[in-house]
Length: 547
Image (cartoon, rainbow, N blue to C red; front, side, top):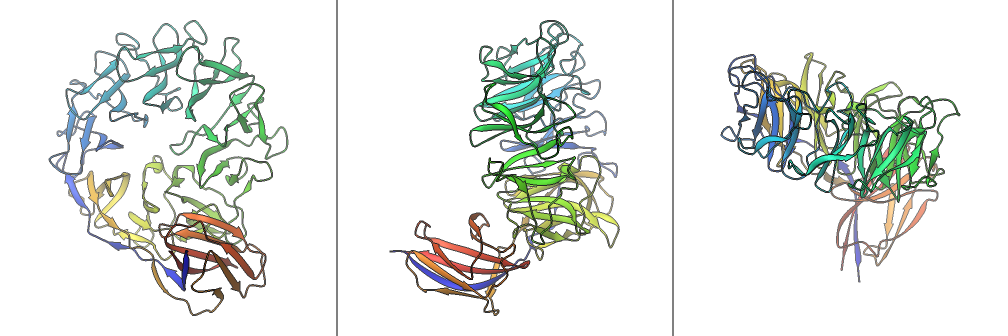
């Protein structure tokens, strides 16, 4: 029989840095640096775009975090830059997919396994010097991966911009369906893998806006509904279509100026408006669709960037409320960052501007520190996660510079990790093998912008005795059920939650009585944390379930 061993605790959080960052490689000697960007983790290596060792011509590089393992993969265009823009194309499998120009062909689809011989053009889709991709249209909206296949919008010079698929081989790269025959094309966009299919928006053969679905075959690529627009923000954290509890949700509408939350089951009759969040005729433009902690989440640019959560019912769709009773707003979509089961974002609620965190409960939604994320182009790449921890670039407001900050998801554990005289102006970073590779300048301006390896060490939550006497738990030890008595009299916005030691929330409920009976018979052996949040103050207890 399971027994509950229970002790009351208050949680404090600490961050301990293991070491200072180390320079991986001085790619371009001198203070100018390598002018690198586009860090991408694929398999057991990190790809990026950088100048050659002479400081010219952007080409493809790779690193494994060591100096010897950091080198230019291939000089794709000996007469100029072979790779000069980055669209964060998803890479199914262990090869990197990217767009390059070798000087003899236009912008075409390439792949790389990290070796010179294994870096090649997948297919000359638009033969000769012509390009298959327009860098100013369709590209950033039009790539997705599903079941080891890359789907994208391309132009072969005959059919116009249509939907293509590729398995990384020449023969396996082909036009999936010619939706509008002729040179214009249907211009698919918002292409997203959702469930076991891909969904996208395009013009149909009558040049009407329409929503489509594909299983990867021509016969299985069909129009779901016409006269429906899709619209969303171009954001690395966004899904234009998202699969949730048997439906695919998206921002859509019969009027391009009245975009609301729609959903589809893949059929015309099963496609329609899910939630009208604003009066008819007013646009909402929902975006940032994701599923976290089994909740559908999205935001609305037109509704003050309010943050919504949903259980798939209209009654269960509502704005997220923070621990002070305010509706949550996302200030900058570029910093919306999902960890294991928490979301970090910048917000300014009740004149408090800075980094916030949420686990999608009111008690678990609060500001971390009075440090604002930076607002400038590319900001969405200036942060990364390790588990539920975050590392990000922000302002050192004392010294007036851009520095590295860390957080373990608590106010006490959110602090500046590195001073600007170590590294600063981090323009890109990724998590790799439990460490962080950062593109930044060194504090002495000796190396310019280069790659650095940083090994943060986040101290687990330390636990200390609570002397408030605000909660009584019994019996102790216990069998199967736990009774909690509190001194709480005001139950407005008061919640109870149970989580494991990693912070993953297993159970949550609103409290409406000073005495709570919990059934814990189905919990596995181990240690858990119970939290009760009252009037913005959280009390924590640790308990162990054993046989």
